[in-house]
Length: 161
Image (cartoon, rainbow, N blue to C red; front, side, top):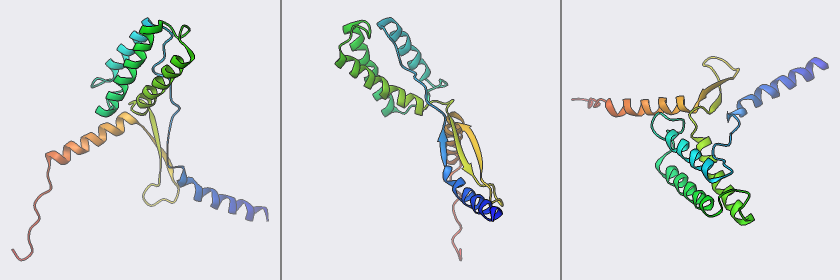
């Protein structure tokens, strides 16, 4: 009886394993500062890391606009108040919302972010987890796109010709 329950549990468990799909590691706070000077340093570092070869190089143009807009609005709050402690509740809420917007984009496009997928190797019923960095995935995707652009599909021969 116990063996039957154990076997049913194994079958159910193996069935649910592929549902694991894709998952990513925990996010981190990238943009956070308590005063105007700290914020200026954070902004400079973020902009440097969004350049080609940087940690956030995969931020696309629309996301870059959103990041720049949010950083600008945060900068105006620091220009007006100087520190977070001197801000009103409304200003703190605005600062927090802009900070969350920027951090969400940067964490999503972080080239060091681990992305794991559950894959079934060919010929196997047992899935395994394969983890790679977002940067590796994006570089591979871009490399494939460049290859396809550089090597267009050969023209097909027409039948009977």
